[in-house]
Length: 373
Image 1 (spheres, one colour):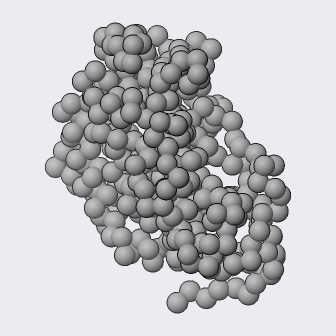
Image 2 (image 1 turned 60 degrees about the vertical axis):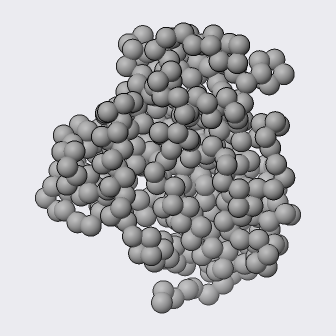
């Protein structure tokens, strides 16, 4: 794509959904920091897109900060940022440990496991439910709907399941408020209505399950398969945070997203982009743009995995902490763990947006169960 198109490549997200993919780092930074020419509101675009289109649920308008610009964006973002403040980082650290240890105990005596399905997925799911104040039975249906939307398989049905289930969560938290993010949204001075609350929760679940579990699993894959990290992380000469930074640069868990919809034709890098047609950023391509790539990534946070500009992810510190503690716990418990198959034989789920393994099989010497201190 770089050789043929430069920084902007014409693509189809679906046979009837043309779009532009930003693959140049500096171009992406300009686009992400220009909400006037590149607003995030897709309402005009989606008028011409079938409700059955598999990519529409990931791109359509919702009453949240991600899909709005201007005052509406500011109102929604303020509510989310305030609600995220209900999560105390030192308490979150202990929570992740409490959730990780029983999951490790379920596998440690067997000598083999799938770190995706037996560890990263349930851990991300349980942690997010806890900080949102969501009962497990409601959260399980949210996870099913979210997976369908990300995969683009039965996405319309997944979208409907999400709407129904999140409505149940809002009703539950009205009856049972607590020190959690959902209660924070309910109590915010923005006075979000029912549909607005559901769309905030949808954004939080979208960011908190799939990308988080992929961050954990893919970083473990990196540590276990890359000689630069495997021994050095376990010996302590490199930290888990160093491996996380490398993963977020080289192979981000959300490879393509950050959609915008120019209201007028706009010229960028000598290319005229059509009005009301999606412009998406390939974080994977931009992070690895040869014009900016560096061999020194430890401690380097200039990647675009969290987006940039007014739509920068406000939950970065929490996402980093969850992944870091989860990875440290499993490596400390099972230091002799190895991949059960060569890394090149690992497979990934289909889908235009995410970078998600189908499994991460490992083996290790059987170990005694851990105790939670």
